[in-house]
Image: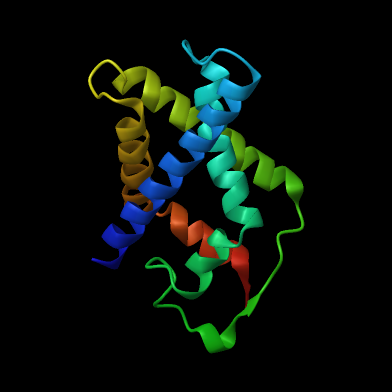
Length: 141
């Protein structure tokens, strides 16, 4: 059940990124018709900021995916390959863009859609095993 709470927090986090990016777009131009790049940027920034703010490390120590691992036998390892982080961020951006294109005609308003995509993606990643990847990336044995 812990992953459901995590999913709700991720949904709020995703929506917050959307709202901030929307306000930035309003400052620098017309937001009336957001581009594909805008929607891609939500997922990209969600993942990239998750790394730089330490949210990814949360999975290592408290996340549902990693909590069953023996923490005393593991130590934190910094991500040294920026290419992996950028690739992951690009993939998450593509995922967000794809979900928005498929669902925006069914779910309105867009902030609600972003929340749903963020929450659903978190739960899906939990069941598919993506979060276990963060465990292996964060720890060395």
